Image (cartoon, rainbow, N blue to C red; front, side, top):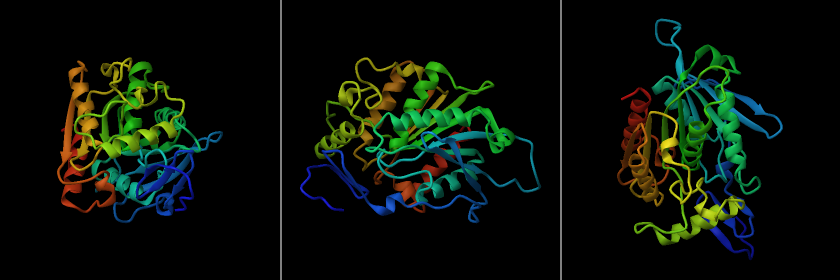
Length: 318
């Protein structure tokens, strides 16, 4: 990555973001893997175009048939939002493709993994707009995999990191206006894996360096945010933010990692949902000794397996 003489706003192993809005991405975070049959899991996948005008696409996943032949039982629909700070990554990034393959096989769901435009070239709210369009498309039964196999009465929203932030905002939007479906559709549950939030005031336990750099990042990728990092899409508990009682779904699972600097705000968020009087059940699950996104980076560890077990159990209603 070429730094030149520009002031760095946020620097990590995936990219370097400058205060002038330029970005240098690490090539591996922009690598893609093709859709198709996955021999390890038996899951099939394909890419679809959602909006040709914006370039919004998604990758659909279908689990293998059960032993003994075909079944007419319809499957939950899982809408997945990848991570990457809103700056890197994609639905086709190898680690997210692998994770969704595994999740679809274990949980037996039909999945729609959303491809959204990246900042800073496409500042927020572009990613939110693309995600809302993809969610509407997912519940429209526009593809035979969804119309033939998906149960719109059991929709789950799942996201990692920036995708966890997107999930929160999609759940609020659904709670406020409902799902744009031709027939009744219902969000049953919401899973936020290592979600990314911030705010103007540092919490007592937040890391100072990360807090400042993270706020610099938000300000660059979302220049039109209302009140800067106090925009409720960034800080769900900011003054004037929509009530958390409006979140869609009956169950919420917020997952954190003890060594992730984002964890304190995610825990506070889960506590705030519980305290709001939300009608559903909010659960917090923390992985000890692990850092941000460890389960997609190193899926074979025992802690990654434990987190997968909890996510699969949640999807099954346990």
